[in-house]
Length: 194
Image (cartoon, rainbow, N blue to C red; front, side, top):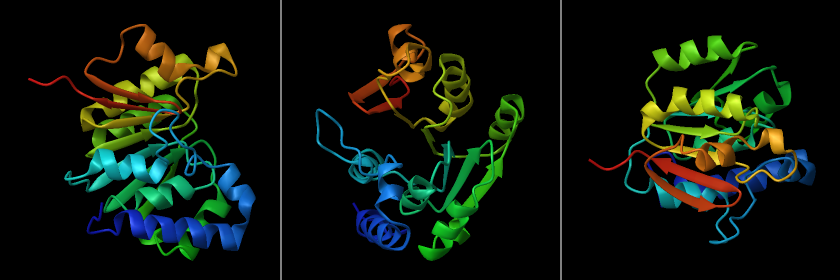
């Protein structure tokens, strides 16, 4: 898929450039190259497939980590607003190096209620949830982002710590309604059709 922001080709160039500049540890600590168990698709391919034909002016990311996923999201959206609990200077350096810094706004929020209030005030067409994986944190993030109509969760299902199985817990308890595409480690959600 190609979008006016570069799509797959630009995203792959960004990942290659980031790996050269920041090393393979950056890739190991990012979700970007993780492949879905059923489809074999990596993060870039999942975005290309699921966002094909959809205009995403603003994407929201919850959980910045290395900043690489935000850089990739910038290839599919005009603007990315990424939320985390601490400022990550290395992420800003990565965004500058990969020439997407003008498309990314990093927001540092120490309190979930402040993040929820801010999400309520900004328009966005897509959300990527990969922050706090605790059940209640993921539930709150989903409630705050479902208005976009398109949500991608990472780390589904969570098998390491049963208390951090947020996306899996939402599915098992029927909290997410609508169309679900399960492809571990990704879970795609869209609202029910009318």
